Length: 334
Image (cartoon, rainbow, N blue to C red; front, side, top):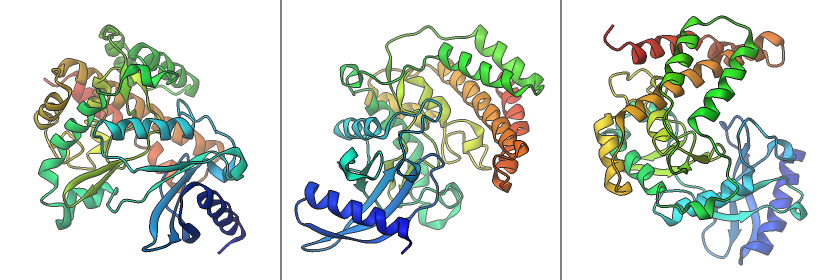
């Protein structure tokens, strides 16, 4: 165990002994892969009986809230996870929210649930063959349940209306100083179709393959709530349909595993309100544009020398894929 791991283990052990009755130690602490903005550590809390499998999610290096884009503080993320769990959304139970006295930075400890997040495996492995046809409807049902969270309980969450997001990404795009005519067309298409602002509801903000923990029985947990905000309830429905999250299964628009019809039916069954397909299409176009601009930013990181990883360069090249997706969405007849 490295010095950094030992420091985290000691801090966790002291905190959890105070917070969780019966905990006597922390074992098998190890860093998990994934999670670009936050650190994720798996460990077992020892005590009487079987070890308790847990996960620590915290700011990188135990520093202060890094403020990546529109991400919320981890304490806010933990609060929203609790609210979502109370209305039937499958989430890991939050056991403890770190305090300054713990010396571990901002973060929280949650239950560790068995399952898979890697899309390639979920979409292709025999283990998930029974679950795959169920996933689109399950996703719709989950997003419908989110609408039961009271707006009064969400005071302080950032607001992310369509106009706000369009303005934000227009600014980022113009800073890149790189011509992409298809992106310009998409901006104009979206500007001409801005939906009117209705009641602001809870939006996960990154509901897609990779942030869904899947088992043989379907969706077991929704992860990574760092982009949670108040906005249009149709936004999450559009985001999960973005072609980039289908991982090659382009004929199954919902995450590469299902149909929009199943997604919408699941949503309407739990939200008790109808889906607006044109509004969802708006958010699918918006999502494809946002992803294309994110790809541009990845390349800029690589080209500037700030991060010379092959992953940054490879993702940067995918801006052209987003352009193809946008043309297919905006001009489907062609």
